[in-house]
Image (cartoon, rainbow, N blue to C red; front, side, top):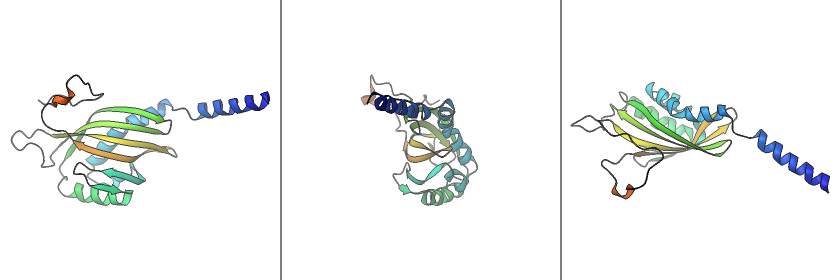
Length: 172
């Protein structure tokens, strides 16, 4: 019985060590906002879709929910060839929390200029925050779930005394 328990303990320990998250995985997840921005800069929805899992659930800032890479790709192909064809997306800050070695929550803030939706008087870029669930599938980290939210203008009095892990830098 003792040998059986010892074998079980060793198997659990070895399997946990084998599945431990690596520095390379942490770096790969931290790189996703840059990969998204780089793909956006091509204004090619096909390139952007390569970052998504086949079964991605994606909610845009307008509250439209897309399921699956084909719908994400079609929507973003139209968006990037149409109203956002001259837009420039910039990643501002990111925070990552690993749930498991192969699953992480990624929050990142962004700003976008040239989409026609920035402030018409000042042309200050529109800003927002992504919440993404990213999963390691094979050797690649892919976006499995994403929620995109626009920043609300002005201070939020309910946040008084609360320091978000990442916050928008003050506008200039």
